[in-house]
Length: 304
Image 1 (cartoon, rainbow, N blue to C red):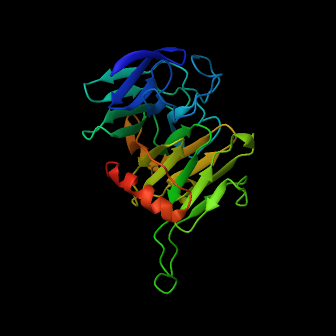
Image 2: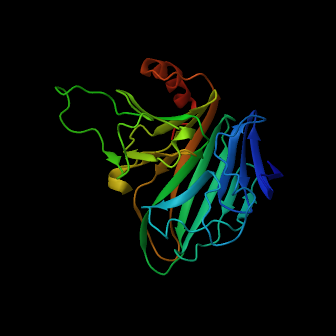
Image 3: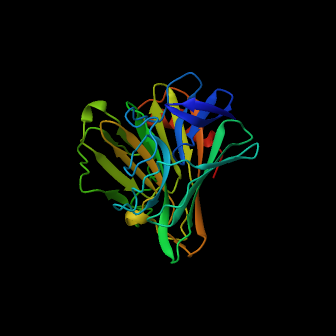
């Protein structure tokens, strides 16, 4: 752990284990602005016009990895995170705590640490209701990925019609989803979504109930894998999604969500956990190649 300046912010924190590093902002946030191999490209998107900025009431994407609460709504979801966060380092875990959002009464917190294997990063995303009334929400972790890669999420296990009659899971579409858009690859075992920098403002989004609990993003020989729990105790938002993919010409977001959870007034909280892995590997686009190259990397990430 070290304190560094990064991207125009003077007070960032770098965590590293071997060749893997991440950088969290403290002048704004909570947010992880960089994930990558030391000295190499950032897997997360950085918006140049937002880098180094602080303060103000305008919501800025900044890029990186952030924490929201679902379902999405304006203005509640877009409460700006433009002010400094409190930090705590206990020797193994970095905690980033936001001040209470004035319009929602919600406080956001991330706890970040490398696990003992040195290659798995555990991210705990916590939402706490400090307000005077109960609320129900879903913790929502959004990784804003850099341009030019592709996201991969698994289908459920293929079972023939003669062996299984009931549906496997929901696949949820937005009003602007175009399933014929060539950025989508609807395979038998996987759904892939390509980030195209030439797409401009043409956006795409789809969500699903991902019982296998993993998603990946591949960019320039680097493979980012995140694993997360599937919990069947409460319904998920957005017609039952715990995984959502969004893209336009600037970004691709790999988003995971927890179940809709009642939070009691004056302190009720919920935590959503992701485990991250970062690898160097060539990942083909064909599905047999994905089985051989990607699935062993998924298994190497600490099981949720």
